[in-house]
Image (cartoon, rainbow, N blue to C red):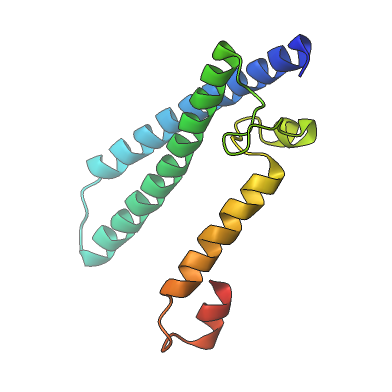
Length: 136
């Protein structure tokens, strides 16, 4: 990629990183406010528990994305941004524009997803309802 393209990607990644950190701060505030609420009965405790679980899931997803963004920023710093981890080929420009934190070219990503999908399908027991087997 040209130097200006990499600089644009770096700026995009930095902006996304900042937005994620801001979002995580808001989630922490929400979690603290839930902990401050005194649950009156089992229904209140159940709602608070479900809310905390939802906040944890959203936080976990954002932290994962934050790690991917930080790794992409490190690759920019060392000059390996835009190179597939698996095959070493250049990652397509359109793919990087859509997912600037990606580590794999489209071909390798498809192979990884196919492998993961086949591993998951192999783990689904035969007595599992048909609709769940098809979803795997």
